[in-house]
Length: 382
Image 1 (tube, one colour):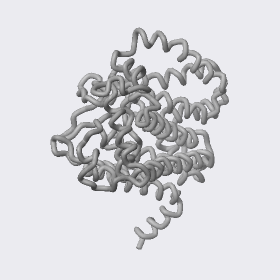
Image 2 (image 1 turned 90 degrees about the horizontal axis):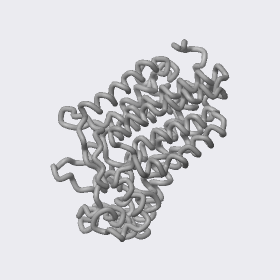
Image 3 (image 1 turned 180 degrees about the vertical axis):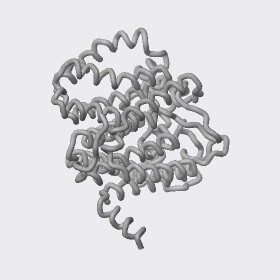
Image 4 (image 1 turned 60 degrees about the vertical axis):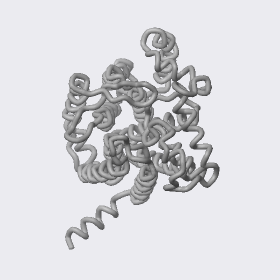
């Protein structure tokens, strides 16, 4: 009886619509991956995703049980652990080839599987950077130029370290999270203008001296992949054909005579999961993905708006920036609007590391909603 009362009390405090949207996304993701053939090694993407989702939900629930202010008060432990993960990966990590020729040393070997630490570091970054921003906001120092520089240095730590791993797609996501959180905290717009001006000035230099050949090829070919249909343009061409072949209603789930069943789209279970939805469920299936992600993002912003403090709102803005950026870049590359950059579609793409850690982010946002009234019950550690 006591357990039932606790469960009912938990539901009363939780954002039930947010949970419902999350559950709908999880079911849809598993349904799509159930239609994708197993890997060459016999690994079932459906099974891996199911386990990752279960772990993610468990972690999300644990996150909601501890006030987010208390979690953030241990920012120094989170920061140290994240730094350890990235450095350990840089030294002892393994390289796993992804789409488009990338060969990033961004995974570590665990018993029976691999894990991508940068996915967990994203969640850690949300916590530490939110704490940094909230401290400056409380002290009315967000207009101080030296403090803005320190904020930029904070953000550059994971961006630069992940870049050296060869995973520039993840580095871009960190950058987008940094922008979203700084904007949500109220950093003045002139600093954003300065950042974008610096990027515009630095891009020609980066193009000549920093970008690798395969990265340049992605920029030059994505609008016309048919110029190299058997190599650099293969993935986007095949993905577009699969999306178009579904027309309005799709060719049906579990159809044995489809492009999905033949594996014609490289990495269709991950980077190009949108093409699976397009072929099997057509325009309706694609729009359902977009609608669910839109509702999820809208609800995240609603929680941010109702947060009683800067810490809670910037946590939500960080999670929003991560999901929105990944969704935008993934859908853009699937529709030939952006170059391929190895970014997965959040919650839908196969990947145990990504899936489990995304649900931790959901737990943090849900935490902000559930503990928004506890402003006088936590002693923060500075």
